[in-house]
Image 1 (tube, helix red, strand yellow):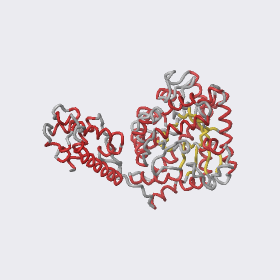
Image 2 (cartoon, rainbow, N blue to C red; image 1 turned 120 degrees about the vertical axis):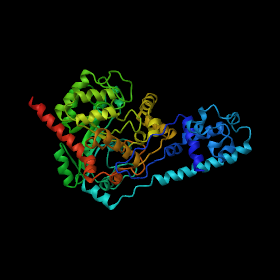
Image 3 (cartoon, rainbow, N blue to C red; image 1 turned 60 degrees about the vertical axis):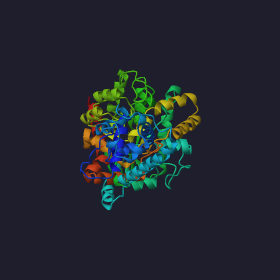
Image 4 (tube, one colour; image 1 turned 90 degrees about the horizontal axis):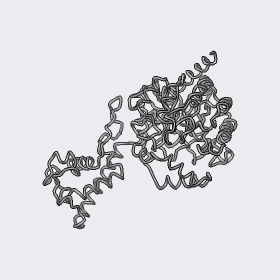
Length: 509
């Protein structure tokens, strides 16, 4: 039976043009429950399972299922390994399918159901839930999480009218992915809060005004809960505030559309305490190409380069999440300070335009920057990334059809429900972390969850309380406590300090 399953999978896999992603060995060579069999992920994908059924119906008679595939009439061992669908020696009777004899179809389909069910049980056994050990808890509590991107302010605007009176995060708000009790459980010591506004607001000349409103919500957060949050303006502030038992709070503006093509407005944002700005969001700007829109400039324009230089001078971090690869390259070439990707993952693992290609990971390492891994299922799970590849184009189309924000949000919710994706799990996120370490180095990876800005999160990383699970998986994969602390907070602190030093040097010129 084992030979039958593997031989059939090899044949169908080749017939569907499916090439399994090779297993990425862990640094310690142990087995932590990842999918080691190339056929396992094939079986876990319902779309490919349907294709498998169709291939069997086209190329196999029911009796073949109960014989060793290498002994099937007209099919050699090489034919089975090369792929039944592409093999001319398959008997004509098999190519005719089963449609002429339904009495034989039923038991064979039942067999296939059993086969698939057994495979799913195997998958569940292969990917156990992570149990956090006492050792992992000690390691996690000895450091702290400095997360690069959290969209709670936008959630408060959308779901609570922009006020914490309707969403008291001190007592827990289950409809959010972020609240104070869960931040404490996750040992979050520093957080960049996103001042996000939709890219469409730039077309209405209200992006800057709305950004100020989002900054006001972040200010209200800190003011409302002074025993928990405190604003940090420097890396030293972050360390001091965290040691005092509070959560250092910083502001990141998510999209260059917020400055409305004005360096004066950029400076104003810095005066209000903004620590980084993402050069674009979903749409290409007059001065920078987005990763998820039509490229118009081949990267940055001259004004775009000026924006980067001014951010260096102001001590603002240049955030390259959301931008096109050409914009990444141009910004890396211009910036004198390390850059960040506040919430992006590895494109080699999940092929979504929001993720960072390997050549850019290497350039980021040369620049001294850091890539802070995003947790969104649509960016970290390979199949989900494929299904969500056009998500921003869909959003633009929905905005055109439903200009009112309430109507747009309802339409977007329907689209998400009609186009489900797989959640992935903690192991997928760990794969992205490890890939960035492999390509760029341990000095250039961090965490940028995107919590409260994502509609689906990986299993065991559903909210801000779950960061200790990452520590456990990394310990299991052979990383030391110091390495884990480095990626949890040390790398972004180093980048901040270097950016501060560059700003001081530029002020002397």
